[in-house]
Image 1 (cartoon, helix red, strand yellow):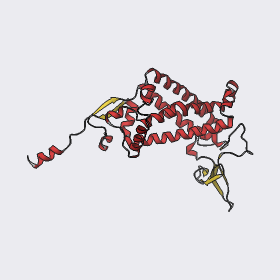
Image 2: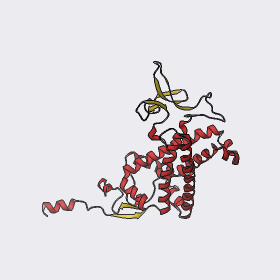
Image 3: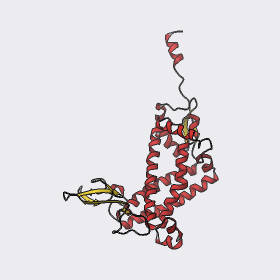
Image 4: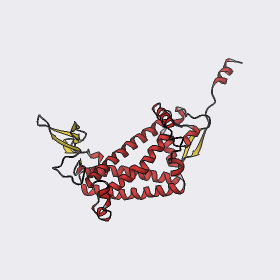
Length: 295
């Protein structure tokens, strides 16, 4: 055997790839509508928060009450203004980022969030509420459609519900270790959501989003008149408002982690699957080569 033949015999055969069905049409459509709604709801919600950037617990919340969370600006010991974020009695300086941020001219002004983070960019509680309420109802309708189609086509039961084996502590621990080592399911394993994915998605779909919707309804005087038990359920409108912003923050955290995982696992393949429904997997092994992510 020549040296060339010996080298060729040791060279592994290139992996073969095939496209498999991953996401149903209804799942893809509701996913992208949700992405749009969540983005607008977050930015318009921050605009609404500008009117009174403080959170309280209980039935009441006024300027004289002590907030559990607050974003604002105040004079420091030298007399200069500084931005701050306060949680309970602990406060950190956030000048230039939160509380005291640059305006359109670049000068620092008292404002909880920068202009680029809110819809609209200028102060307008009325417009912020209009944007927020329109996309809130679109979000509710889209989520209801997601639940309905998920039950009809089996997506909720087949793809999101963890199996008994996946709920075992050993399986969850192994999945955590794989994520820490940036080893993601490939090949046939990529057809299914892993345990951490399922637990995260179920937590968002079954708990986080319903709580966010119900607390949002609790802050509406009209809904309070129609469903007065909502106020008692969450311990008052101010507690509901605080819980609403907490769930929104958890949703933002989920989106950040979700996008990070998509980037690490292969963004082109992941985004293509959510647009066309087709995922490229290797027929040979369970670990996608780095070069294949660019295919």
